[in-house]
Amino acid sequence: MTSATRFVASRTLAGLDTVRADDRPVIEAYDRLRRVLHEHGGDAVAGLFAEPVISRSNGTALARVDWYTNLDGRIRPLADLEPDSAAQLRHRLGAALAALEPVLRDREAGAFAAACLNLVGPSAVLAVGDAPLLVDWGLLPQGLAANERGRVRHYASTLGAIAPSHFPYPPVGREDWAARFEPAAAASPEASPGPRLGAPERRIGRGTIAPVAAAGIAAALVALSYVPGVLVFPPLPQAVSAESRALQTAWLDGLRRRRDVLAAAESFACPRLRTELPGLVPQSPAGVRLPADPAAPPAARAAVAPSGPAADSDRPSAPATDGLVDRLERSTVLVLAGDATGSGFFVTDDLVVTNRHVVEGASTLMIAGRHAGVVPATLVQVGAPGALTDFALLRVPPRSGGRPLALAKPGRPLTPVVAAGFPGLYLGTDPTFARLRDGDAAASRDLVPVVQTGVVNHLQRYDEAAVTLVLHGAEIAPGNSGGPLVDYCSRVVGVNAFGRTDDRMPVTARYALGADGLAAFLAGAGVAAAVDDRPCDLQATPRPAATAAAEPAEAAATPPAQAPAAPSGQTAPRPDARTAPRPGRDARPPAR
Image (tube, rainbow, N blue to C red; front, side, top):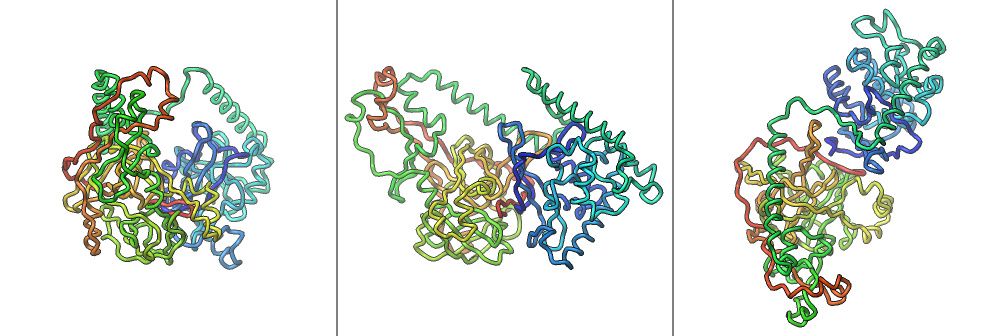
């Protein structure tokens, strides 16, 4: 997950080449770029480059990239600015590029940092408020990496008219960099200026060798990746932080618990296994049915096939139920906070909960949902500043069609949970959201939240803030902020708030602020919302006979199962308080 807060732009990578440095596409090394720029130029220079979020078409090849930033203000391409504003932006960008020059000539980081200045085109230069921002960096139109003259002309149409006159055009590899960038310790721009745009021919003989060599090396690496058994991995970290070690330990503990439960299931007779299965392996939310009566005890049923031909006649008819997915669609809403988006959910018929960071600073507030439509919202109350009190309460017109959700404790690790919300990564390709963004309020009737399943991984109790952080495995992304994390009885166990990543480990930690902290926040706003401490009783019930008939004959011959499934959740122990991690705010198209 990205640490930036605001969606800027999106681009498919069809017809483009990724610029490589040190045998890796520079676009995949944003953390390194930000670290290098921060060390040499501070936050202002580091903020010049938008943060990429890359998706892959087949798990390997880059498919598209979404760009994010922490800058605030109206987003406009340089070409759309008024002449005075455009001149001011060019001046600021030129000054930032001049400040970058010592980094570009650094022996260690210079080739990498300079390669990042390759841009797709003039539209890659944006103004966010009055600050410059580069998107589509580290990319070139297909074929230009091996065409130096073409790159010179291309550079003139992007940064060439803005950068200082002695500024060399960006390289496409370390050898290409060495041909034109002298190390800062050996020469300064004044004493030994780099080649100018008007005289690239002097370097053609030397400059064309590097792209060809780089292309050959890249082709060899690609070919090597198709050889069975040959994979390329990044180097292992030399040291693992205490926090990463704690995450890894919690993850391994969860796997051990799951292994022990499944190992115990090997001794089950077939009838019992069929009935116990929903408690052992979390079912899809689509197969979970809930009591229609909101006052009913917390129970959810997962459908399994009847164990014998007479099973349906031997059991009483089931009470009226509705689906977990249907209930989430009725309860979860898209929060429109000015030019940003987030998620939220009903806690009464006219009150919606979300995160504070989703709505702070927004000039207008609205919600949109399949049953609520598009309605205005007013900010009632926000939590105190801090990561552990990131709550906000919105009021909407009564009888908007939303269904309130109850609150519950998160249960023990491995309790099944579902995250619902509107991540910007998905909204960016959703035609329904595109219609809504273009002013078609009727599109809200087709707006369906994204649901992701997982289990509770770990609980972190902070007594000083009276809240439990719920670490869980349901996939969330920027835009999920403020959305509910529910158990299979449709009760809110947490409010999704942030994710954390570690560039030294392939681990993403997903956090929700527990329902205990939410209940305290609501009580401070005068809203009574008790936390139910009863476990969610996930049981198995028979499917209709028509479904059972489609199963193999040996399954139909299995004797009827009588034992109910074991409860899937219990109240959680309170772990020791730890230092609160710093969350990253999140947002998606055009989101927070």
